[in-house]
Image (cartoon, rainbow over all chains, first blue to last red; front, side):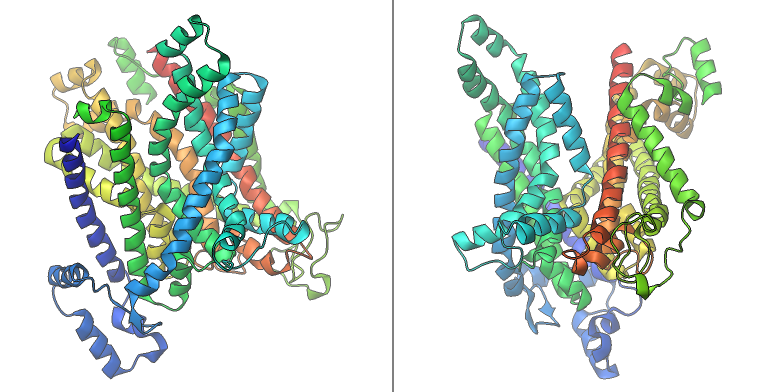
Length: 312
Length: 295
């Protein structure tokens, strides 16, 4: 187990290095002189020269990267031209809402997909299975920004069940305000979760322990809960971690539509204010979040299923 | 393709069935057939849009703004008096283009990279593997948005961003398939005959490794349309007044309470395309599984 943990930790180093290179190169994609692009309408020859000097744009690319990496190592992630302050506190201030949204929508997605996948697997090939499959096939192509507007219109404006804008006043009020945004993301991720859970359930249902349990005359609920679901939920950790990127894409969209002050809306508003330092840093934070969650998922999976760490 | 299959059959080497379009349509499985016919109809509607509607998608007529669906305007009109039905039809041209280009370029890139990684192995494979690990660490939409933010909004820059990001999925799939197929008899035979690496890779390995990538391309097509429409919605993709479906939804957003049809119909268009393409993808996946089982 310890060897697996070390191995898995070492594995993240080259990925983190590559991620830093990509994030650094992002700003090089700006066509023309980045200093002018960063300054926008404020660009005067003196300011352009100063920014160019600050960013070291005259140095060779590898040296620019090393300088940038050195700053990142010293936790200096750049200055936001729009907010006139360090990007890190601005960005991390937005993190709680995004994390809350991710956790809330994950729970909601499990609440939707686990029962439906279980029914589909138990009635494999039957009418209910086909109907659930068709339903999820249809929901797969729903654009989140459209679904967000429709949910806000129907459940928010017409039925007045949930608030449709802003983060609320903390605590339960925030949970209340996050319900529609989380539901939007949950509905977009549920088809993927349900599909993989259904196939792993079918696999477990046909396995030896279940057959033995059946032969021993165990009651159906016992078989289902203690034998089947527990074994089938494990792969779901991996599926959830693998689809975190998809869910983060969802948070970017719903945060903007529902006016939530999270990382995603920070990313989108920074584009119109041409705040490249923020765009760069938010992208980095999202990538690191994905890497961390996948690391935790792999380690917890290995912890829950010893076969994983022994294989290596 | 067919010539090569004949030669392989003559040599008694394993051959996958010829996957012509008509066979694809005729093979059992209703979902796939409905999906293919549906997509053909939508494509035809996009091409022949001028014959299917009397209106111009971008002509302004403020006198008829925000009209509810009626016999004259099937899907209603938007705040500028433009006919929504007409704009949805013309929008299909843009959104189907988004899906097609957004799949084609990464598809070709991923196939070449995946073949190279799987065939040569060693440090080439290791290097490509690390690059793939890095790209998949970024959430797809976030990286696409970040790249477009740097390059500037617009369809061409969206295609550049998607090409830079989504080739990795194809490369992974083709690499895996190549590793399996590499040691099959027909590849060993081709090697024994002294064929060049490129010939074996593209003419022998690729036809046998491509099926799962084609299946994935169907979900990728939907993903690209969703991403393209999302960027259009946020003003980062296709620019208004072009009738891209995401742009149309953004236009109608402020009137959604009084005139929901402006938002509803472009969204239904995206969902319909997604449903048909998913049906094709599911059908293809079943078929590939069946063919694999037979072998």
